[in-house]
Image (cartoon, rainbow, N blue to C red; front, side):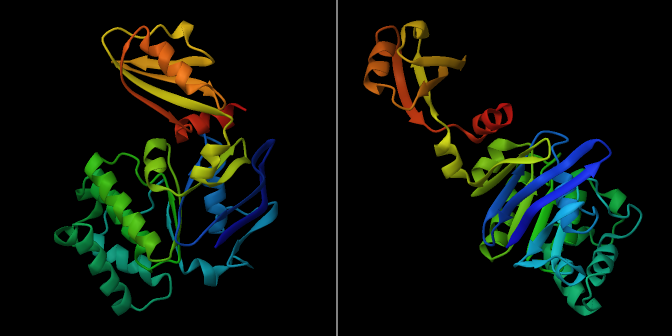
Length: 295
């Protein structure tokens, strides 16, 4: 279990982290979310000692994080740190050995991951001969090669095509199911909502929400109604206790209070339009994100 305990870091007049506390649990995918400049990368770098905190701390399994623990962690930074002119397999073995494992152990692990991620035939190519997506997969192998107990990924889906995103999502789910703690940042909130059980939302250096995603969605006082219809749009101005927040191509989304009379809402919409479907649900992760960051 990874724990941030009132972690704080100041860069000049800017508080990059302001008494941040949250937990990432083993066996669960945790999405780390926030606007640009919110403090996500600073927090992740603090796990690996790349940023020295001014106060507070980071703990792994209840103890402060040190070199011995970090040798069992995997990190995929947003700014890729591989050697473009070095051959793929050679540098993966080199990076794995930095974690204290033997060449034989590392080589076996590297070969497994190269095969698994479809890069076995490119093992002896220079990194700069690979496409962006393939380089991204090599960077992921560098984070996985020491069979980490904690995997921290900074924008791992950036620039990937849909097939590569699906493949990486499946891999992260598999690593998590095996018991690893996985924390990753992403601006692709629909993807985070699809694969994550927990989320942490940071804004201006402060944690504004953290915990089980379903529970966080349920805490929002409003609910959302998704309506599909044929032909002309309903006359939304006459609907009780409903605010139209988006509409296009025969679909609309309304913001309503939790105690709204749904029967009256449906009846009012049917008076002016041919309804196809009507769904009442908590906010999406994108809506939750906007709600808490704006607040």
